[in-house]
Length: 258
Ligand SMILES: [Zn+2]
Ligand SMILES: [Zn+2]
Ligand SMILES: [Zn+2]
Ligand SMILES: [Zn+2]
Ligand SMILES: [Zn+2]
Image (tube, rainbow, N blue to C red):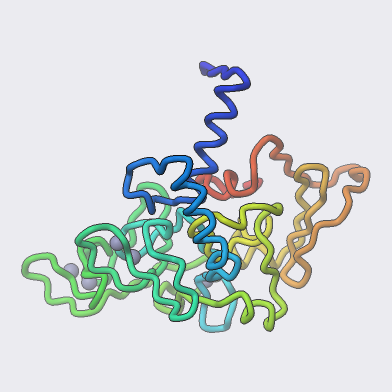
């Protein structure tokens, strides 16, 4: 595979652009903001994003099966980051894509080119995102329904997309810091807080130490904390992913260490 080499200034420019994308998240309507507009934009969103929405796809027992991040798919077939995600007081998260009928982000467990089919045998994409009726000509389906099994073994129908404020998460005793520190201004961060959000809820139940940037993370349901990296024990399972930020890792289509 060919490698692309960037000199330092080009690498910095790419980094700056990625940072810009993460913060602006499409709010510029495709036209780059000027440096002054960009600074102004950051000031405007700083207060809102200090108290962003934390978003999870949970089953009816309250297990948070999926942590929603910028690239999570909505029933309307657009990403979380394509939605308006800054209204923490009303928790209204409508889609910003022109002509899209979606009024509220609702996660669909779809990866890559996979599909999620309704019991009427048609894709979720043929269903109206507002009233969930199938719009395939001749189909009488009035409500999308699926027996797709989640990693928690429950069906799709037994799940719900939930939105919380920072105060609500804190009251639940859940972490609210952003991935690896920093990123306070990023758009559409959803529920992403720490490294253990990168795996499914059911997998967080199992202890699986992960090392990142010299710190050791234990992925357990009860303790989601970073501890100083001890010397690796013989035969211990470790996953190293150096050189990526946690957000980049999250956006990659593969699962950790699987
Ligand atoms: Zn949409
Ligand atoms: Zn949507
Ligand atoms: Zn249907
Ligand atoms: Zn149908
Ligand atoms: Zn589940």
